[in-house]
Image (tube, rainbow, N blue to C red; front, side, top):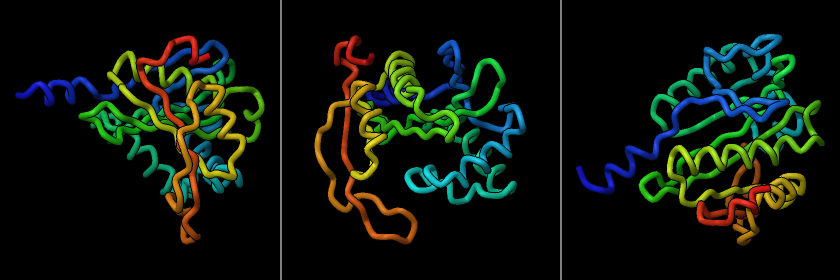
Length: 202
């Protein structure tokens, strides 16, 4: 086994609960128990207009699709390739949103982070807090070196989250993302390094 192989083996996402007090980041999967039903919560997210616009869960709008979403989450946790967390209310166990880390170059320690929130959870700073927390967790437990964040240039709310979570703007990617069968759209790239001062994470 080479040194590179060893580093890659250490860069695996393992299920964990990240406690933020009023909310918890809990691994998505079939074992996740949400108030009102986990399948129902996935479907509600998939049909939410803002989530459908920016972070579409196209195949999760019915029970079979929602079950498949949870099964894929389990498989990706088992592979260590994606850390997908449900953001849940600590008091009542309801779903607030999602935050996830996905390896884009595991051998080099590069991952991307994404997030979405249900309507009732917006405007409370949860996306910023969850992005900050999952970034810290990934750096400390899986050896992330660089974390990238992409969003549509028209998604100003996501741009604010990126900035507040300590991800400086690095540039605009032209015709880089396609929503369904629509045209390719431009995205902003934000990123932070594991070596950036911890205080910049908020």
